[in-house]
Image (cartoon, rainbow, N blue to C red; front, side):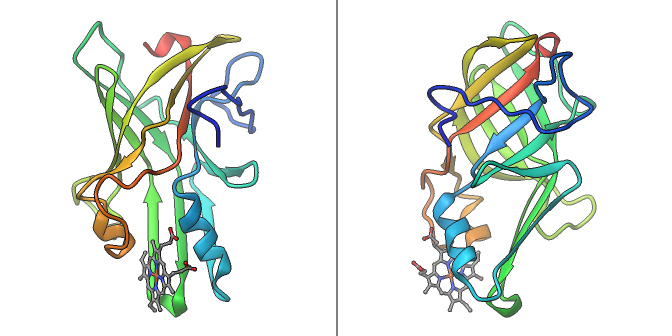
Amino acid sequence: MNAGSEPSTTTPSSQDASPKGLAHGMRWGLKKSFIEYVRRMPDGRGSVGDGAIPVGADDLFYEHDAVNSTERGPDGPWVLAFRGDVRFSGHYGMLFVRVAHPWLEMDGDAGVLSIEDPGARNGAPRVRLATATLRRLGDRNGTELWGSDDVALTAEGVELFNDVYAEGEPFEPLLVQLPVSAG
Ligand code: HEM
């Protein structure tokens, strides 16, 4: 959960990894208090799949999606796409939150983290969930490390959490591990 400062790199098994095995993707704790809330529910459930796995005690790892990512230019927009489908449920079916296939849509170092339509409607536009400023933390074994410690909920994301959090609510820091060639 310390992605914004000292990077704790992640090595889940993944086909998209550097020769020394550092997996490429995004490590994110989403919103710790929300995950704890779901854990406290008698029927609270979480599921991960389609490229996402749990890492550490509280984090999720979404694998890098090279197909939908774009190259980073000197300036202008670029996209860091990730794969994985994470779902939370509880309150006897009244709570259902899906955070799937997150993309960081970047303009310079300012990013918007968007997710697939949480209702899983085909062709529905992506939903802007959070804003995040990316900071390059360094390179390790052919992998670029980027982090953000100012991840904040957008107005569009408020509804996903039942209007409990206001726009600007801080979410957990995130850490991105990319092949050096990606930018
Ligand atoms: C049966 C209906 C619901 C009841 C009775 C209920 C009850 C509660 C209660 C009592 C809390 C405070 C929990 C605590 O601090 O331990 C809470 C927090 C919260 N609820 Fe619900 N809730 C309901 C439905 C929902 C739904 C549908 C969502 C959609 C995502 C939701 C999202 C949240 C969130 C995000 C928090 C704040 C968690 C945190 O960060 O501390 N709730 N709810």
